[in-house]
Structures are given as C-alpha cells and as structure tokens.
Length: 117
Image 1 (tube, rainbow, N blue to C red):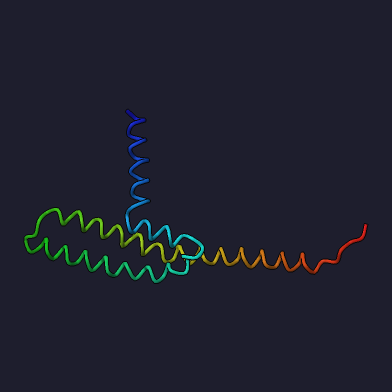
Image 2 (tube, helix red, strand yellow):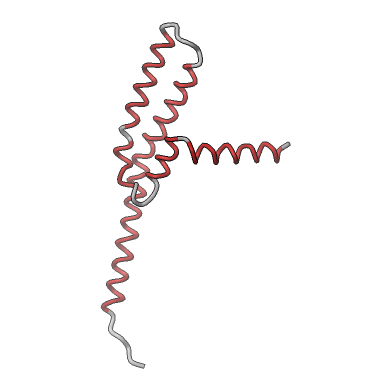
C-alpha cells in the first residue's frame, strides 16, 4: 500500500511540474538565463492577489463554495512568485560570482609564464 501511495505521489508531482503553467514558468526562471526575470515575475503576485479578492467578493455575495478552492490556489501561486523574486536574486548573484571567479582563473592561467623542463 505504501508503495502505491509513493508511486502515485511521484507521478502527481511529475505531472504538476511538467504541465502546470506556474510551475513551468518557475522552472524557466530557475535557469541561468531566466534568473533575471525573477523580480518582474513577482509582479504576477499582484494579479493573483487581485483574483483572490474577486473570488472572496463573489463568495461573500453568495457565490458557489468551490470558489474557496480557487482562493487557495491563487494564494499558493501568489506565494510562489513572491518568494521566487528574492530567491532568483540570490541565485543570480551566486551565478555571477562563480562566472567572475572562473574568468579570473582563466586570465591567470593565460598570463602564467611557461616553465621549460
């Protein structure tokens, strides 16, 4: 039974990582080329919070109960994008420091005199 639950969770995670738009976008931001888009992606948080506000107003006005699920989904996605902004800045800084160190090592290696044996 435990094995079945484990396999189901693995397949669910794979499906969500592969096909859900927010996860695809966050995976693209985590690449080296996409790190610079972390802060602009934080602006999506505003649109998700606006959607939460609209759903809450509809619920308060007598809307259907399934809108509560959308509220949870929108809040979760807003949190993912709000967190990804600062995380992408840290990852970008770390990547640039690594690239700078690699460039310095290459320059030092190019300027070393050849030692004759």
